[in-house]
Image 1 (cartoon, helix red, strand yellow):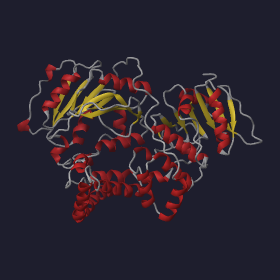
Image 2 (spheres, one colour):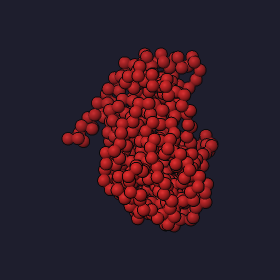
Image 3 (cartoon, rainbow, N blue to C red):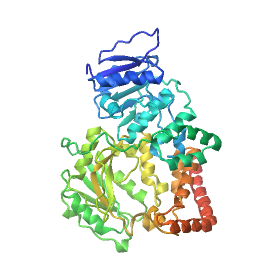
Image 4 (cartoon, rainbow, N blue to C red):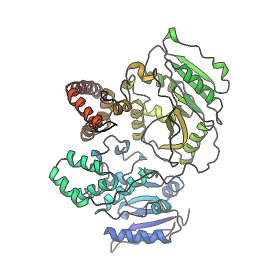
Length: 529
């Protein structure tokens, strides 16, 4: 791929000039204003598709690997973790403590990670132009790279850490200054989260002082805008999709799903159903009616979402599984085809669909892909799920099983994309599912609109955050959870009454929290022994 990758290399007097045959080469040097000026000039004149930022103290770049990476629909490949970017900036833990992309995978595993270093980074030229080059508001090269990666992810860019871009780990990373961290916070987060961090971060006076110095930074509102989902893609072959649809006393929804799956432009290889309805209420579904989609039903006496999903994962034969459930509706004929097209276009492992609540009408859609941090109705490679360990049985009758699985897939290196064009309806069913186990007695929607309803964190939520996130992130998560319960929709009177309810219920709330935390810690201790 000659003349397709420009080289922007860090240069110090006395360095040997590198050989480079894939495009132009530009020497760049610090301070940052010089680096930015050089890159701005390169962006103005280059005709290459990619730019490689490289520090030759890391050794020679692997040209064969670079050519392979340049043949992808990923926007950035980088080696940041091997240069010490892990966990930065720390201030992000105060505002997004349970975000999946605050979790760094191993530096030996290629995975989605925004914490890039400009010392080892391959980026699409058009993407860097869309971001208007390098940001110029930070003091350090390290923060400049991480902020660029965060902005790219938030704008729908595809960014991946590659474990082989740098051959050995080199501890080159410098601590990011408090000023740079507050600049980052003010740049990407609204005033309420700035005030939240001032109060919760250790050092109130210092926080106030630095915030006053940085608060005039213009906020950048990021929304997906880089990869349009409306772009026409080639027709894909059926890769073999096993649709998973556990059900519990929701036959009318299930039958509608089977009808809609029967008219897909790419038919599923099979539709697998576990039926956990009590035997005396169980209905015999006529599977022979659906000759084109190979429906198989597995009655189950044991109840619970994880035991249902895991049974179907064992039975599935497709290259992909579609986590559908039994309460989807409005499945358009090209739904599976869209998911497969997106998986092929990005060569990704998982595609999350655009789920809306039935009866509320289809939402306004931003028709741009982005890296997903949720696990709704989802198409995913079966092998990845199996390698990640399937569903964790601790969540069998409680919430967040899907988020737990998505975290494990992420840490395994999964490339997970949200497809806004793959729209599908979801029924807020009054019965069945987790409601049968009293796991969704109070939803967030109820807590935001009813004075006396409080959505306490469940033992499964506390278990999940304790399992994967740091003590600081756990503390911030719990604080945010209860702080959000204090504020509901409505006028000032309703909001004031809510505060009174919270105050009166505080002894019960605290007792409930301690009980659920104990349950979560007991399970974690059991696993560590």
